[in-house]
Length: 387
Ligand SMILES: Nc1ncnc2c1ncn2[C@@H]1O[C@H](COP(=O)(O)OP(=O)(O)OP(=O)(O)O)[C@@H](O)[C@H]1O
Ligand SMILES: [Mg+2]
Image (tube, rainbow, N blue to C red):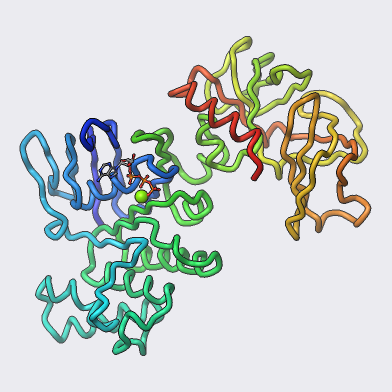
């Protein structure tokens, strides 16, 4: 298990900057995920940590060893860092069998033959490929090839493994199973893992900690539940599946909660303040479609309650997504069908009452967000784009 300390990491490609001075610490034995949209710098960060890319400035310390210090002209290449790597494209050697692929890093490390054979056997067992030793890797399914890549990355017992979207070529069921296997192997072999994905669900289910990136910077860093429940920007909220993000003004604050009057409406929504907010300031309130309740017998009006007309329904099998117009603005609502009788399933054109519990909404100051204009663009897209 290896601890990693990164400071002031930048990477420029010509005149364009891909990383703007990252500082981060990855604890020994931790499973950390870099999460963010395409082009935000996840792969560049991973490649700089692994030694496949030379940063423009910065320092990287792995365990006791400084592997990058650009000022002092220190740069240890990937093959001297004792790291394992797993890529989206598997990157197996096509002319080698399963066991030859897994044995390769052990050969390079001059592990004696007897131990090498034992280690390959153990690794193939761990990934469920015992019996496939002689099979050419070209005669394996995508999921099996990815398991060979996992076994190969773990074979030399690296202190740290880097994963770059290793599961994105697999179908959703296999992806889930393989994700669970990646996490189980992390625990079993007690490595440190740095994992890259743009899939929020994958990040949440696998990680001890998630680092959300935007345009070469870290925007929030926390446990999956911290990010899921307390996003500190609309950018992170959008990424964490808050389908409703509404700009407005703070009209009341008490006990860590704030009331927001949504712009151009009479709607007031109460939520948990995830950043500091004061009355009168501009803020966004965000909540998930699944956290809006249909109120069949509305008993009260007030904060978090609104009447809306169902404009569109999308059948999802176990649930229905609704596009609702309330006081002129579109809102997204998700209703679980198992909780309803047939005549309770909302229909297009129907007028209904809805409620959002204060504990299920978050209020985010617009001033406290790092790059307001950028986040507001994301927030606006989140409201108008169908999902
Ligand atoms: N070799 C390169 N030369 C020039 N620009 C590059 C190079 N590699 C990456 N970039 C740029 O750096 C930025 C970050 O790229 P990076 O590959 O790290 O993104 P990413 O977050 O991994 O995206 P994705 O999810 O699409 O893989 C992008 O704007 C990309 O175009
Ligand atoms: Mg990438």
